[in-house]
Image 1 (cartoon, rainbow, N blue to C red):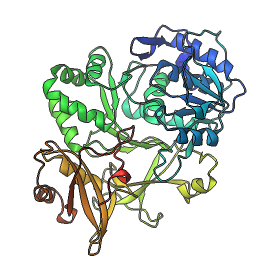
Image 2: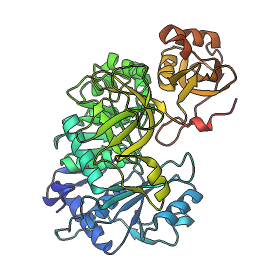
Image 3: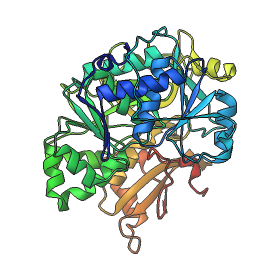
Length: 482
């Protein structure tokens, strides 16, 4: 029935999707998605109102069956952003649960309700070519209006099959997560990944440690999360013995979308005996690297390149390659492989600027590489690379050092202009106790004891909370200016 989802070809009672108390078997999913796909005949693109529900999963599978590129929409987006995405991607239809009240920005689109109980006779769907677009996923737009990254079908299949190899992912695995479904992490990895393997996924709707305990304690084998979720898990472990037991029995704990602080790595490992593995990807590339299931879950790293993906670090000129093995040699990550997007929709200028000679995609992420190939990301080129006193310093390792202090709950590190150093290191701290925060000189000494002296903060500022986006990433551009 589908080269993307072979398991849909069988009218099976095997569980496929569960959201709360609502679920679909593979047979029911094939029937509902097939019925909806028939209604998409002739559409050029389909917007999907991407709530964490069965309807979103059925809508996306139906679009893929019909060969219609899906445009996931974040229900929390403002009217201006939605209007931009609709104008830019020009979908013919919007898919959502029946009765959904949609914003005015979507009012001119043909509404197609997603009936998860619909039935349709089995049929063969023509399979589009590997380079045919599967998704148009919009970036966060931190440096301007969001750009639509066009992801071909080969990017989806190659990434999911590479993760099958790296994670030993099989149809017997049951994945649990509570990630949003408008982004590649929760949707492509977290929903389509299990479906491609013939396994199942249990979506929490909303993340909670109670939900993780319940699902991992009742047969789920894998957990996907972002660092904020694992931080909550680490905080809850001392008081929740059932959570400890549930995590201890999991086959794989995976974190992504941002760096997981080493402190949380170690707390989870100490309590459960299970180490969280990290992987590294982007909207434009899907997945690039991962710690392997049969490899060392080395805290602070995102593992090695996935099968089929080439990764290199380059100097500031964007061309000169940096050899692996020097822990102080920071370079920009460039990647090449079948996992890459094909273009930014309607933005040939941005597409051209994103690639170096030879088809290498400029990620904008800075990293070092261990002698055995493990990649350690130190931050974004635009916000996390600090040039101070002649050194190139990654914010990530300083943040990890700060988080090891018992008085620090959250930490972010940035640079700001300095007449003498070029840039000085600024630490933004959310203290555990707002009434008695750790003194600035204590934090500076704490970092200097763990890292080279030139990496110590020169300024410490205190906040009640760090600004974060929907995926839990710290939005450093939103930090107050000094």
